[in-house]
Image (tube, rainbow, N blue to C red):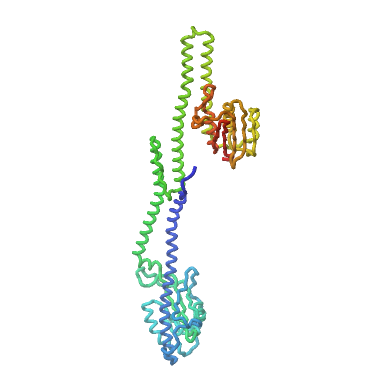
Length: 523
């Protein structure tokens, strides 16, 4: 049975719905992680912007302390090999997926006493840094080319940070950042507070160049923006997204349910119409209908068609049987009545003649019933589970019909068919040829045609008249009724051919008729 097209399977639809339900929290967790990483990078962008502003202010003071006019100095930020580029943007490089470092525990060495332009410029800038921290909450340190603090918003003056990984990279001319766990003894501020509740602190180190050399490093740090705080401030949008997600989940569940329930309801309606004896309309087809329901619909259509064909077949068969049995039954009853009413006045010869008529009519009825049973068994037989050896089969036929010529032209060795079915078909063709061959020779040719067995039975009779040809395979059609023909022989041959994936045909002329039976070797 062929299924109309292919569709999604029900278990895939259910799996998709369940996967969507399971993926919602997983996607929420993943989305929160991505959002936290995004907030860390936003924090880093803020620190980069602050570090550049602070670094350029320090650089200008440093040039003044060296007695150089800042307007006549070299461009403020130039790395070796990038002198020709008008802009050198600095992109965030932090990523939570690379891991979070523990809090800073490395001891910082003490810087030697000195008086330098770097330190004087830092002292002049430090009050400004402290005022800025009131608003931006960022800690800033300016380190000289040796990694020692020259200005800070924390109590780190006179210390050197040249052992910290981000400072090492910056002293080498590369911008760097690290993420460390945050340690704080203060309780978390409320969600509505401007202060960050984040659990990590971001440290950036921006190198400052002059004449292609690193002259200082701006090290800035700030607690990263917190996802929960940010979501709280954006709670209206979050509620809208949550509502949209719930609506999407409802719509997806509704659509998946409709894909399953709607065609099942259509199949139920069709089944109810069939149960009430009506003519079932064709089932609606959709590209989204699950394949199991498509299979069910196709099976229902096939079942309906077969039931309709079986009902038509039964009605036609009942009419034919009634017509065929009516004549012998009427004859038997008439002969029985005459014998009963006129028994005493009949001679022994007359009684014997009436008895012979009754016996002949009863025999005809028996042949009809047996042929009908044989035809019904063939049409309703299950698929063959065994195959028969054709050499043994035709050897038995040769013994049964020694006067018939059998010709074999490389036939297949075996065929998947009931031996009784094949015998019925071939014997009916042979006896039909003998009956109409007017005593002339009959030949049987057995060969292979692709994946089918080909059997040709040829007689040399007068051929089939044009008037009889259209009715040749109809049940109960016979030209030999008076000699015991039932008109079911060729109908049985056709039933065997159709039941086993083949066909039966004929060619006829005034010099003879050839019937050709084709049967599938394997089913």
